[in-house]
Image 1 (spheres, rainbow, N blue to C red):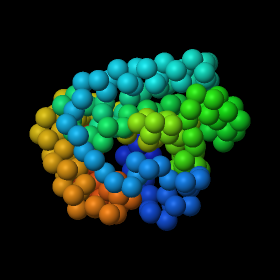
Image 2 (tube, rainbow, N blue to C red):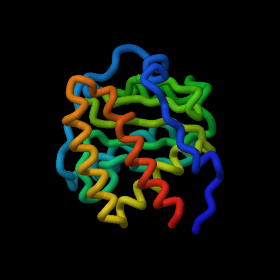
Image 3 (cartoon, rainbow, N blue to C red):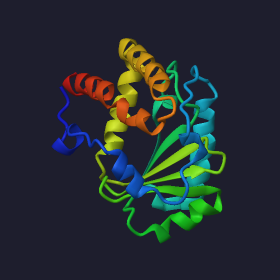
Image 4 (cartoon, helix red, strand yellow):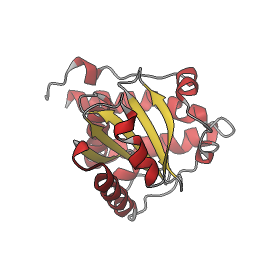
Length: 196
């Protein structure tokens, strides 16, 4: 069994109020409804293109960049939005990275200092989410563990896909509830990954 620090094992559960407090400007249109699609083999190529552009404009500031979320798991149904974790030395001084990312078409939509300094930007096309984290944040570690577990455990991959499809139907008209509704199954799957 791999040992993980407590801050990795203890997953943060945000509230709708915290998301609302962290919202910068108008919420993206893509947040109005949840659409789950079958896996698209083009998703890794979209990640590669987006991450290449981000690395080109941020240069040595980038400590790590990873394709995470459901689009990073072959065979997993997902919202057709590429989630990318970008690790920087720190996120507080937005002047070090925000103007460069805005210059290539990203818009800051969430500022969540209480969640390990998380910032989220979306592409103008709304098909890429950039999650900006300080290099020592535990959440990106969980993202990678979850992704890697689902890549190698088809039963949990299918459980997660079925749960997402069901929750997308159950939260019609309340798309903001979708992410929070996934917490129970995500925690169950992560518990198995941590125990392995």
